[in-house]
Length: 469
Image 1 (cartoon, one colour):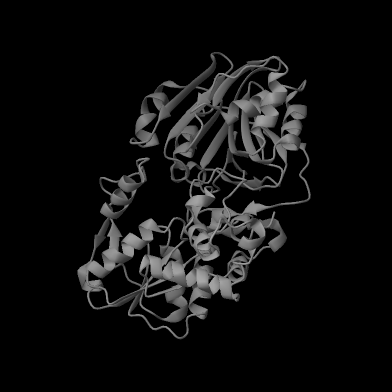
Image 2: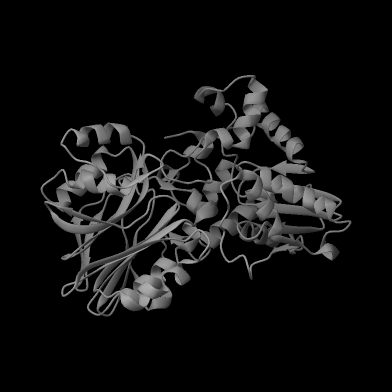
């Protein structure tokens, strides 16, 4: 995943840019960068690896030495960005968040124009550079951005820094957000709506799907009118969004409370001693459950954060699992002999939650009932670079379904496991419960999750749960 932030100001923008980008640290753990422009000095850019050093520490030098009236920045799990490009349209910097499914097709067409690419990662083209190359196929930025929105299969939102201002472009179906903030003599564009509040900005507008604006210190002008259709990613509310975020007018924290309440409504027959959330992503769901059910909310284990300020994980899965477990410190008085109901935002691979459950049993728990803040994830995301859900073959649901069916299931077979009232769904759920040693397991129903968001279902992307485009 990743997050971006941009500032257009009459005065130096680097302070706001630095902290605005830093407020997106929950969305990426590997790469980060900032690019600025000043009429007197031109462009300046810095990119660093932040896998084991927080953004704020890594970019302290740049925060003091960079200067500009316009600036963009990004934190990412994938591409190194922003990148600086010199083209027939002039020099510009660009940062982009999303996923391009038809990369090979687009690259082959562009390579036919005698274009070559510089930024590679594991033999793959940096998709931010690919977006820049697409835009450069046209005579101006507006036509280039429109062209990119037309030919990219997947999604792509972007910020483009030029001497004339910052172009903010929300992807065609609005799968990721861009919110504009305003204060005297400055505007900002942000993935997360809360990122600018402590910097003195107030909400100005949320870009609609496909909308493109240019932002200067004097104002925000719409250059491409929004489209009619929206498919914003529902997983933003479920997991990726920070608790203080708001998307399409819906609070992330409140949505998670609503999910917890829906789980409690379908659990009238269960009376655990306490309800807890897996820190930190399951806590709001647990609060919602406790508030509705009357079951006491407690913290039977806590995450140790003083020397674990980041969510950095090694690439090797065994080490990832060990470090995830090392972060959790039990509070034995709240565990021993107790019936616990534990809520997490989702079950993806299942490994960490299974180990957490065993950890609770080893600490003396009598029962560990598991509830999740979203339905079973059955389909890998093909619209966004969500490392949490984009590799279908790693999903525990897919492994269990393959075991049940005796072969790799096709899409029509997978859809038979979506209905929570079907026998196949119940069998899948039970096998997951057995495999991960839960006392009981229930997933949040899709209809309850959509009710918890509270906006038109047709405007929400639910592909990873039901396979619907």
